[in-house]
Amino acid sequence: MTAIWNRNRGFTLLEVMIAMTLVAIVFVPLLSLRNQNISETYYARKLLRAEFLSNEKLSGLQIYQIPTLGETKGDFGEKFPDFRWEQTVTETPLGPVNEVHLKLFWLRGEKEEEMEWVQYFRNSSG
Image 1 (cartoon, helix red, strand yellow):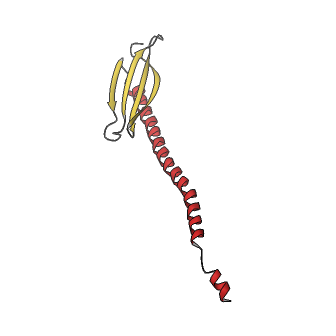
Image 2 (image 1 turned 90 degrees about the horizontal axis):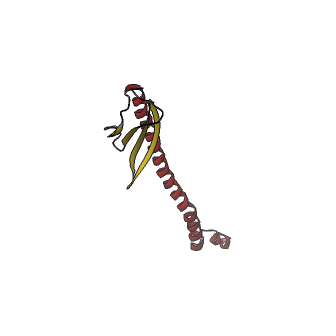
Image 3 (image 1 turned 90 degrees about the vertical axis):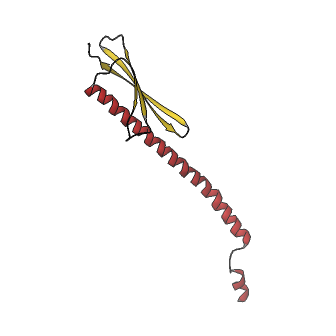
């Protein structure tokens, strides 16, 4: 009976090393996927915020002020310090309609990201 007891006492070093190798092979890619997911979620939040900020800016132009011809630049203040915008208003061959190009910029690490929207507004002289 002591021979059976001695054989079932525990794992050998080889078995433990194989188990640890399998765990490492499985968990390293999972951790990499998790980190990539976090990065992509952060980027998606920035894109969504850019979309909301551009919508706010263009809606404000439509409701409160007629955009004037030329280029203007600005930011969104202390609330959104990561974002800045550039707006270019040009005439169109459609008469009383102006074309508004709105670009939003923000940093993604070392690289500056950019999105652009185009909208048309009836100008004040038409």
